[in-house]
Amino acid sequence: MDLENFETQKWIDLAIQYGLKIIGAIVIWIIGSWIIGKLLKAVNKIMAKGDYDISLQKFLLNLIRWTLKIILVIVVLGTVGVETTSFAAMLAAVGLAIGMALQGSLGNFAGGVLIMIFKPIKIGDYIEAQGESGTVKEIEIFTTKLTTPDNKEVIIPNGALSNGNITNYSTQDTRRVDFTFGVGYDSDIKKTKDVIFNVINSHPLVLKDPATAVNVSELADSSINFFTRVWVKKEDYWTVKFDIMEQTKEALDAAGIDIPYPHQVEIHKQG
Image (cartoon, rainbow, N blue to C red; front, side, top):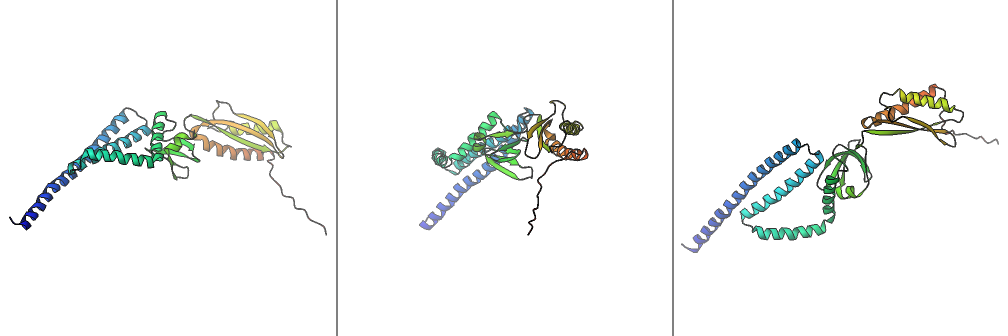
């Protein structure tokens, strides 16, 4: 066999050797991905039957998915011929370097774990945090997604979310709606309170317990201010707030009770 034929045969052997490895790696990747999908579905079913919190379900599924895919990548690389021990060492070194560069991301991961453990929020809660407010749509490994009332998506890093103040409007079954109504100084206090009470007591969504309160809260510069508190189911908050505001204005007008507002006085100079 001459040199040229020897080189040709050598390349053919290498192509067959590595071609088979590549084909094997592709097959392992396809089968592995299929198995991961089946495992994730099985885990999801188990957690659904176990009545796990939906936020915890999605968080754990994301964590399991990424862990299994990293393992699958290592197996595929080993099939191709990459030394897995060397790869693991390289992965550890790269992981350390990435960890140093992405300390914020690690903090966000830790924040996600804390949110899962202490459960200050869950999917479906309406919250206010980091200057944003909205309904919790998804709690991921690094971030939490909110949907605002005007249907915008807000993404908040879990590190900042777990370390900051969170106002959760969904944890209690009831909420208090506060109003301040101002009337003129010529108005009768008892009559004004009766009008406000009548509006509130006639609203079907206002709860009887805790009791409604209507009190004079301030003698302001141009009005007597009545601080009014009513209790409602959390899902009725905005309906009651808008209804009571509108109906109280109409009732005060009908009763002849003045609601003061700024007046502009035009002064004419005589020349």
